[in-house]
Amino acid sequence: MQENGINYQDLNLDAALIGGVAFPSMQSCEELSVSTPYGDVPLYLSKIGNRNIALISRHAGDAKHLPPHMINYCANIYAIYKLGIKKIISTNSVGTMKNHPVGSFFLPNDFIDLTRNRPSTFFNERTVHADVSEPYCPQIRDLIKDSLERKNVGFSEGVYVCTEGPRFETKAEIRMMRQFGDVVGMTGLPEVVLAKELNMCYASICTVTNDACGLGNGKMTVSEVLDTLANINEKLQAVILDVLQSLPRQNSCNCMFATSDAEL
Ligand SMILES: [Zn+2]
Image (cartoon, rainbow, N blue to C red):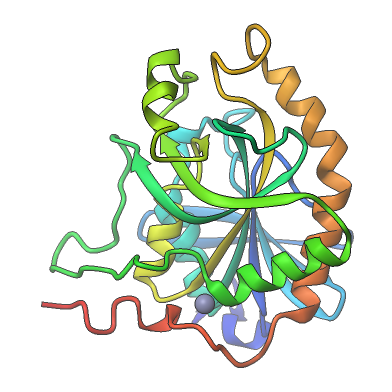
């Protein structure tokens, strides 16, 4: 794929990071704009350790902070695909609906999609049913868990519930959602599904930044979320560095077959 005078395959990119509010800081980044059928995507190329990576800031845009429901998920994932990258590590911040401590990490192993107004598939012209029985790459999840355990950092696993936002949830909604989910966020979907549709490995490291509405002490604020993030950002970056270094060249997962038998 040739664009910007660059043959993208020559970049030899190992992985993409999609950062949320907790955005890994990097040195010596090269900026690149990748055009897709869904819009142009500004991203950064960098080397972290011995790995070449592309980094997308999910909330970057013309607006100061692009709200969750306005993020161009299709363009972001397609740009990564176009760069020839097969592995994505994403960070998302979530509110806990159960006993996942604020300030800890959460690794989703499944999701419930309650978004309602976002383009959520690449396949509008033909019928393709992606297999999402294992939506988050088990191989990358194991690497993340290994790193967290080695660093003695608290984490838990479970079901991520994604709401449309941008408003926070009502108390009644949280009472309903906690019956089938562990944490709630606004940015995890349809990102993971779009990655699956293009047969890519995708795993998320969520940072638990607050109690879900009605479960904590008083009204939830954005500054509460940002304070927690600042405290755990350093740990997050260390884990991401660790995982990137240990990414295997060979896959032992089935992510690459998510749509291989799905076409009708
Ligand atoms: Zn995988």
